[in-house]
Length: 225
Image (cartoon, rainbow, N blue to C red):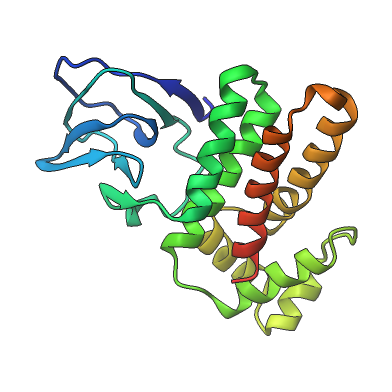
């Protein structure tokens, strides 16, 4: 079962439940009152919420609201979710990401691009939550500077003076992806923008291009950290 991203609105009626998967709620419009495991907060333009699996929560919203909700249904897709607080402040890259995700999901969607959108989100979240690892930073920099070069895990591990298995483990812990998966997230966003421009031409609005560019800029900024 794959993880899912969707746009959702909530009513003013208070609901209480729990589910066996974790969930991320990010603001697009309006606000959502939430109580997660006894801790109260509000999801608004500056704050998101993370609901751990099997945690009872109650929620209600006002009129004219919209949120990006991520259901983490695939428990094998492990990342540092145990570090996630119930409520988190949204930084500029995440806000830029949400602007683009809103535009994209509101007009069209397909599994391959949805998967890329999910990977970009996890990359932004893990970059914000994890302590930088020198080896991971070094590998990220190499990937950024050699996008057209095949990945040689053995060579990268040797440069970091650790084994291949250690490199893969540390990279996964810090980014949520294997080295190969991360390389794909570095290359595919650029390819997506180019392909969209070629296929859609004038149908791709300037605003949509700006949105894509903001997402790419966010990834580049965090890749350099």
